[in-house]
Image (cartoon, rainbow, N blue to C red; front, side, top):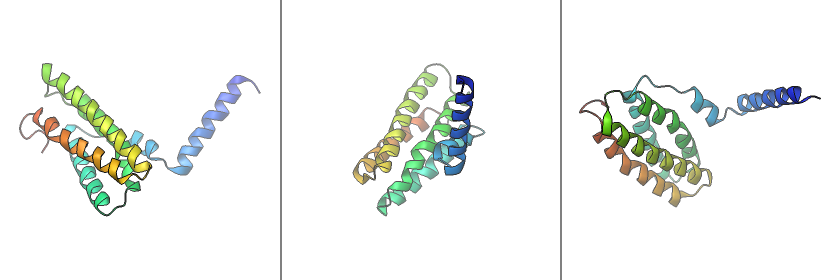
Length: 141
């Protein structure tokens, strides 16, 4: 088998694996948001859901939230034209921190570690007011 055919077979196998298992990563790639307002609403919804799941000691489903934050974070960074100059730099920095905390939440939930999940969720919630403060009043409501 030549290398081209091998690569094609491997690619086809990966596509089938993602389709068969319906991974959160595959779903996250298909998520899109019209703008930062919709992305922010999604983030708020998922943080609230994560809080409820954590309170119920049901940690594992939370892992998908961390994965799904990527599309929302990307939309907020790419579609926040109303923020310029230094504000744009600050937003980018805070969103990177938020993304890292989302990754931490995913990893902790995947490991079924309630304490680490709670810590990551507190980090996310701590960054949320800072993100909001960088937007003009009402832009995310």
